[in-house]
Image (cartoon, rainbow, N blue to C red; front, top):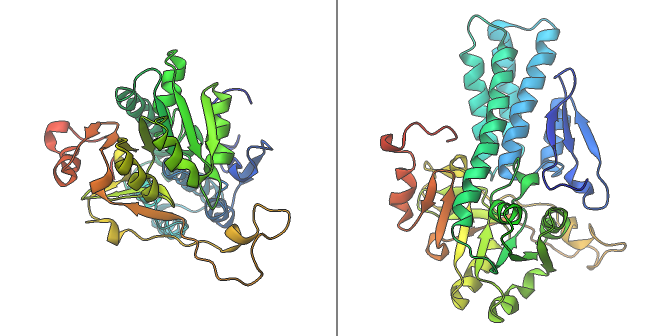
Length: 360
């Protein structure tokens, strides 16, 4: 694969299975995986075969559609089919608790199912899952345009974790402006944190940017301070899994540390994500659930032999919360939000903006 926009989530030929590019195998192997059962779908989310908040939402939409096709083929219909899909949707939504896009996509698909009077439920779900995917592509392009307006040719950008095409659909969110700049011949330099504990910056972000021909340098997480001190970074661009009503943001563990360093060195710190990631029902970061993962991801996962004493206790949260006070702006497909976020975020959903096409 030599292009930066892999077709990493799609329906199988009969539209009763979902095919995904297994992100756990990158960058060394390009392997696709077919999932058919609910248990396989949940495993794909929990094991991070598919990951990135928008991508998980796209995947969930396709999964519920594929499951509805399977059920209708076995004779399920009407209220019984809807009840079964609601149960499957609840199980799917519980696979990962932090990213709001998963439950958002499930809720949206179930609303489509409930409104499918007079037709096969799967037909309505098929239209809806494709709409979710197309809207995500449109959203990524708009975010990329807004983000690029904050950069100048020659800038250095530091990013943390992975918020590119693999985590979304086409351009991505935090990587979108960089990839768009590359298409337009605008020269940028990127420093990609490796991003412990899952190395998604090293395995995925560095791979995506290298595929696109971007000038990318991989650094360990604890090197972010020195590249800022050296004046090599003019902006930090990160994605997000949930944004609370006050602007507090959940993203991959280590993001808050990058924000603290950026404030110290006077580097703007930007969060990029769709309005579907904004959860106005969540007042602040203290109310965002933080997923904790298996300690073996720290002790032994990336090593030929364990690199920590057997049985040592591990604390392995997948996300942390960046306080809104450290965020220079939140960039969405509807525009750039500035502090105070308690006013600018709700304004994205005001009647004057029109009905949001991609909202929670």
